[in-house]
Amino acid sequence: MNINERNQGNLGGRSHQSVSIDNQRQVVNVDDNNGWHSWNTVWDYKSGYIATRILSKKSCIVTKMNSEIMPDVTTLPQAIKEKQKAGTKEPDHQITYMISSKKITDLTPYGKNIEALCGGIPTFPAYEVKGELHFPFLQLFTNSE
Image 1 (tube, rainbow, N blue to C red):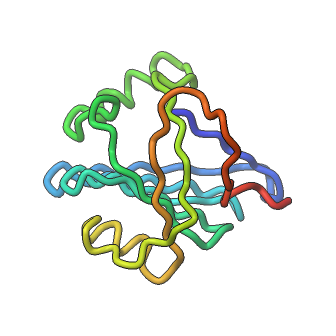
Image 2: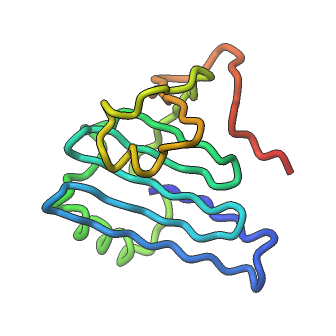
Image 3: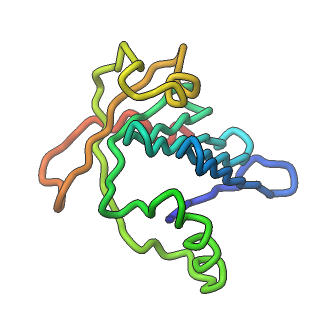
């Protein structure tokens, strides 16, 4: 994982991240509590989708899970332990996504967990981009500071 945490504007400059893994339901929840830059992610292995709710943007992004890169939910705890033991923050893989400006109007196909995370707020699909981008595109979630 490559998680860039910015502590600007937080009292004491601290953030907290928690990961909850439910092997039975095949769902992973990642919560990053970092003041206004906080976000929540659901990895729904049953539906095959990942959703991230960005609190400062009051929006969600949904993308298809890349099963070639994502560790299996049952091996995830061991992968996290190995990453922590190695002490490296460098990602094993890097993926680039393009976020569409077209809103998702029905979250039902993405599963109940993603519906619960993104329901009631603007939700946009993101698509994995192979290779380098050679064209300008709309960046919906730029930092407006």
